[in-house]
Image 1 (tube, rainbow, N blue to C red):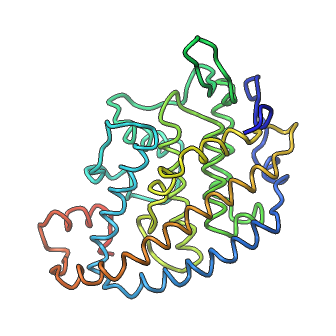
Image 2: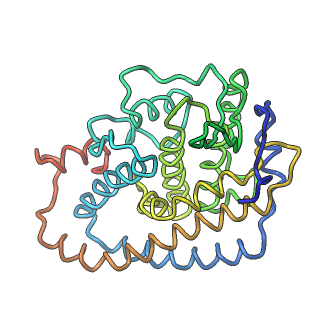
Length: 304
């Protein structure tokens, strides 16, 4: 990362996210990559849809469990709730509100205190052994966080704001980016952003494929963990203001997320034959069962 890209030595004052998004233009490279990823995902989703509907419950439950595990590992956080199914926070809806965001954050950070948006200013930086600090960027000014998050929720709910929103891959990537750079909490912003990314991705897939997924069918955090250095550098390289042009950097972010999707498609396609065999040996789950997986499946409302 160059010394100038994405640097903002001032707190970020409020601007409308819709105006920021309107400046983004997809490059030919992004469009080409998107077309390729769409084809690969279509093939993967078709294979996935052929798996027994009841047996696939095991896959979804394990998928969410692993996503939380890998997302915590990205932050070098070992205080992770690997079994996230004791709470309805992930399964009640794919919609977003201030309350839902705070509830997700509280659960993901394993906090016993109700989450709220931060009341102080924050910056993302590196502190070296000699005590010097290298500031990459500042989050939104504390007094503007609520206004930014109001805008964020409106953007989340939009489907026609930009051509970007027609793609589940790009819209969820944009949601991820916006949340990280607003940085609404004192801690746990990356983990919360990745979970909201997955929720938006799942909701968008349901819209495009007319499906009824409750959990993201890819473990993107698994691939992000392997490519953590690139992930952090690209996020740091993007200007989050109305004064600078970060179109190239934002397209690199889209390309990075598409690469993570591609990796997961490849990984899961190789895993599917083993899953078919495993599913054939698993007794079917029914709504009347009292088993470990059936209890979680009920929480996820997967029997409907």
